[in-house]
Amino acid sequence: MAKGDSALKRLRTSKKRAQRNLALRTAVKTAVKKVRQ
Image (cartoon, rainbow, N blue to C red; front, side, top):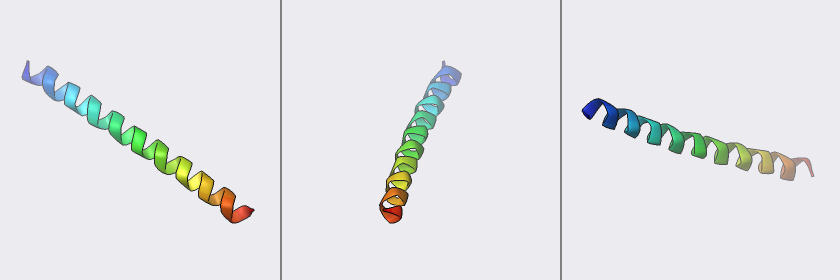
């Protein structure tokens, strides 16, 4: 039970991290576009 719980928690945190990374990447992309224009 505890093992599954920790695995679920880790999965959730990794998902959050992935979403944050994606948001950061898109923000950087838009910034680069603005600088180039």
